[in-house]
Image (cartoon, rainbow, N blue to C red; front, side, top):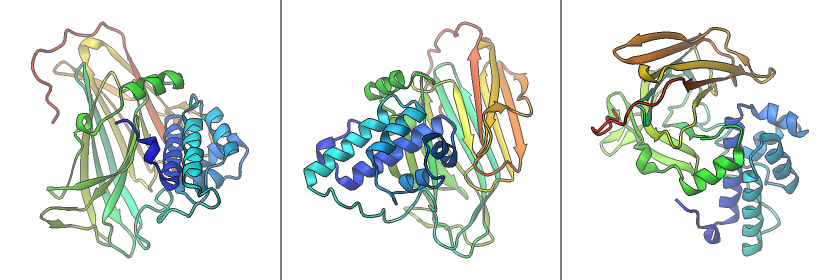
Length: 326
């Protein structure tokens, strides 16, 4: 997945810079407002940069890299942007992005509410398999034809330079993810929006080769998507960010009981520092699997819930059979 920097346009370089900033902000569990405050900028400034309304600046790149502990990853994207401007000679004005997807990724007049958000992460000793189920309700006046999801990994939290070097050598690939999505029993087509070594943004489309099935006003529908990542690329943490009004949020982690896993979590918001989850994950053992479940109702918008774990026992011997991903 090596990037062809010599072919990158100014617009593509600016988009890569915005995606890199968003990735590290998500990994660190910060809202746009919180990051702007840490950098000494107006609360809306980070939002404008990530949405493409403001072009990257050297000052922003330096401050963002330092505030997020990105190990020069954001700074390198800035250098790529400057190099693209030099190559093309278009150093004056960066045109606004065609659509400000970071702020309003759906059609004007649409308004999504998540009635239920359920995530289950299974680990078999080698592979993490995430399954997301969401019940979406369109409370707007226009049909919704796509839904934006994000996939981000950080193998060595707190060691950004080590993580960056790791993913440059071992990038996250579409082939290994084996991303799949369904709605109403129909396969959903998907399109990559951002494709970085450790960060992906994907549009799930309410359509496939057989037809279209948009989410119309006042309708609710379940969507489900799943992907897999090997443990050599997935750090021992999982974060849920509340980007849309959500009525119920649920997370379940499933590990081999032989690993003797322990789980803890923290939550952050627009106005608060990280603090322990208000309720502890519930643990139970079932057929050799240790399950940890955690739920909350009506979480505040922009809240982030981060679950972390460690294994107190030695890893079991590798299985000889093929991994089952479904």
